[in-house]
Length: 145
Image 1 (tube, helix red, strand yellow):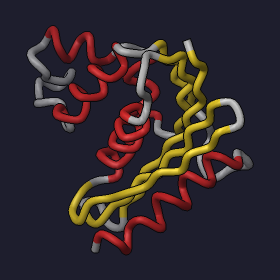
Image 2: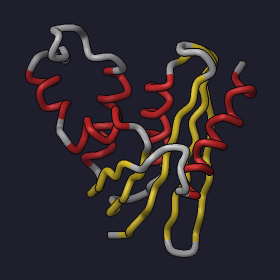
Image 3: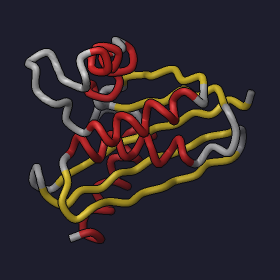
């Protein structure tokens, strides 16, 4: 399996409001930057969308190290929150519908195609690639207002 490193980030101006996402994919000597956004969204949706768009770029099953500063994203996979969500009919611990279910379901399908290590990084710190993703996400916002 190919080994791919992915960094992702999402941003929002207002919550909800216009938002953007950014991702960087690294494979060997190759580096790919992607970004995009939506006119009305939330920060959480953009965090998930960044991971989805990045994983969609992979043409075959890969070993992936996916880095994000989103505890929402990383903890959901590392603590397998979605197992309880699915058992409870996509309701959270408060018996409310899980927010962003559409994105979670797509992300779960994509994650089944790869071996993914979900890695939490500190946001707005010294991580060059996380900072690049943050810039890509923020720069995408005005394009979607």
